[in-house]
Image (cartoon, rainbow, N blue to C red):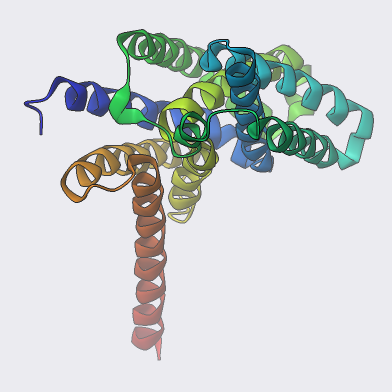
Length: 270
């Protein structure tokens, strides 16, 4: 498999995105805004449709669409207050409408490639973009780790401690939007939101502290992404969909393990 350059590039990208997805997706899950990944993924698809119809680079238009959508979601979240999730639904609905209307004017083959991704067809330009994104996300995560943990525990206490909560949230959301846009191009718009949530959901089943949960989510994500590339090569499956399938399987295995452990404990105490 690694005799082919395109497979080496795909594997490297899978490892990088596998590490990046849970570093940003975990915070979204903790804030109960998992659906925002879906909204941005559909926004990226709308950007792709606009790019294909206008004859522009779909990746760059997709990134622009995600950033604009993220700004709109932020605005609507403040407007709706306690019903902040409505902002996500509004953007998701608008993205679906734009995508549905414009997809009829775009090439079916080109458009479909963005639904399930094309990680095996990564260009050097896209590889460099992923490397740059990974460096920025890793730096942001490790430099703001304590502040993010403080904000997740209590935003009010974080403000009192002098943490610029709004700016931290803005930076995280912006990186999240960029990651969704780039991830949607590589693993697919129908896949990226799952890979942002499933690894953290699986790690949460372990019921450990924040640090261990973060490490576990990265491990699950990397195994899923790398496994998707490997199995897709030997079984001729779609890499993005295969990665999600592995992530779901790992979640089910953890659930089964927890259930079996609980059953054995009950038998011992009986």
